Length: 399
Image (cartoon, rainbow, N blue to C red; front, side):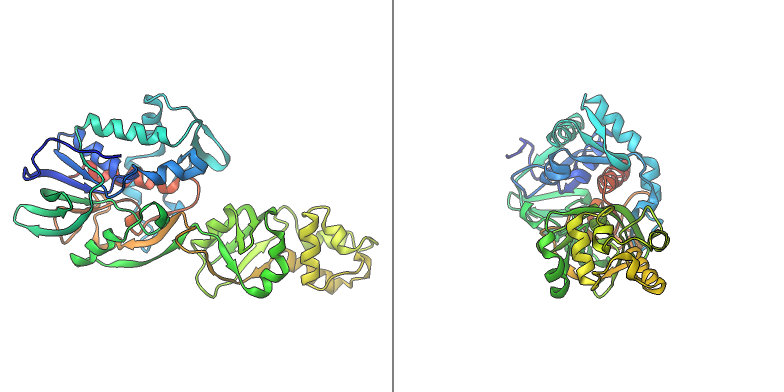
């Protein structure tokens, strides 16, 4: 897919946006509709692949309950301004204006009834409303500051603009063309970058744990997982390499190398009290646990803890210890499965160098960073798209 224009590349632009993903198209369309002359550049051959593949192809485009507490950042207050000025309801209004049907899944997560391609098409139409000019595919080779603003040298030649918006995302999903360009440009102009790492990503297990539980691949159970300041009640999925599922993807953003994660296997009950109330049962403990947990998991868990007797043969202190283990099963992951399996990137351009209202650099006038490139990372469930819309809108209203 190629987008070109008849305009002379030497003609100065008001705004150049690099990156035609969610944040970039939102910014370009908003700026264009304000009368700015906008050039949108992207190196990809396919438009907004991350939107297309998200949500199993149905694009989880926002969350009804989105708020600042749903984001991680070195400065947790940075996202407040942009999110307050462009809410989920604002984006939903756009979706409805284009007649896109959608539905709510769990926890306020909104998905297209059809495909994510509908979101891409409407953003493309919004850019057309703003008379945005495209260069795609077009590789950026260098960026320089000059008296007129910024010169962006590309495979198609140089372009000059008064303002430059970096919307090239993070390092997640390299198969669809992720790039560190935003971080490189930030560092080139003296802005700090919080070290990026994979987030919303499955976790690998240490060999010993994997030996005990690896053959449960495909089995899932409802749990509450916690690590550091994160705590999530969702499903956990066992895989050939470790653990995944929404609960694990969520906690991966908080987990750091060497940390244990705590898993409450019975989040709806006090495990110790429940065991004590059934202490006279002659049922073997793995069969007893199989009444509330998947049988195969109950068997593996009991084997790993060397538990094989009927419930009535355990002493009260032993039952207390088993109850504590069920409510606080500690696992130490060996690492993440990396950017290839991550949904987003944690870290990015440090927010202390940016205006929270406009996304503009405090030290380099006319230079903006938006979307996943910035050190603002949402939880699973449409929050990262909402940050893309909100930060893109903030810059688009300011450039």
